[in-house]
Length: 91
Image (tube, rainbow, N blue to C red):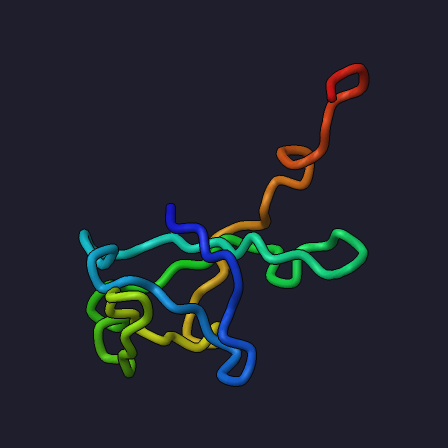
């Protein structure tokens, strides 16, 4: 699974590195949270690599990114909320 730190806000899109487009499809999650600690994009998203390769590209920090609008992804599942919470007694 690919984790995106922050989306491209203007395009409402995820930037996926071209080198990550292997296999038939890819799973993407976005780890960005709002000021209240809620995920802005709380799902795991899926897109076929052939469709992902058709989107425009840009180069950032010597990495070619495919800029894929979130609307072009299929929602695969909801992120497990308990995965990110600290269990009682752990810190």
